[in-house]
Image (cartoon, rainbow, N blue to C red; front, side, top):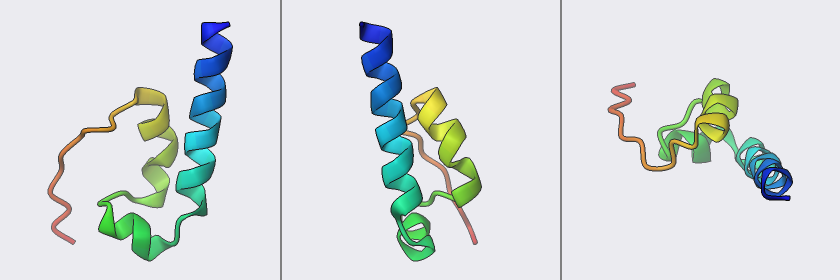
Length: 52
């Protein structure tokens, strides 16, 4: 049951991130192409200098 709930949460997280505008993602220093890997890896507290 834990695995199912974890999968369901990741699916929800992925959907929420995908629903954000590009500007909102940029404010969070997330590129749209990173969403899947961030959700799968669970790197919620990552730090990165975007320098864009």
